[in-house]
Image (cartoon, helix red, strand yellow):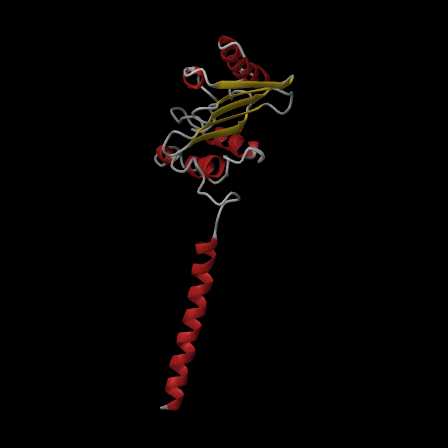
Length: 192
């Protein structure tokens, strides 16, 4: 009788330890800033696309903590692999678009925006009232852009390296210049 109680106690103890080893790491898992990534769900439309695109999208758009501005954008290799796997009819990576003109127009519509041109190849615009932000860096070899809109649910965060189009019609430098010019023109339209 004493031995069977000891066996039950031992089995119970082992089960408790195993459960702790599985549950605790998941419970304490967090992103660098302690918040769930803002782009969660942006890849859902790819669940029925070409096999593998959904996972690459999650790795590029969702698994990164892109609302931390001091963080580098995701690996360009993931985007390159995504584009290699793409087939006719598949959409481009959902979080790769930078900032749209309509978003820039919204940022300056209330007249409470500021622009920053401290560096020759870099420009940013901030809607100080609504806490929206867009930035483009057109430095050769470092072309990138970021956009944040905290007023959407979930918060919109796009941060990526600008690359040459798959069909080579627009180079990374040309695309970065287009985004740069759009922000610059918007800043000039409000006298900034």
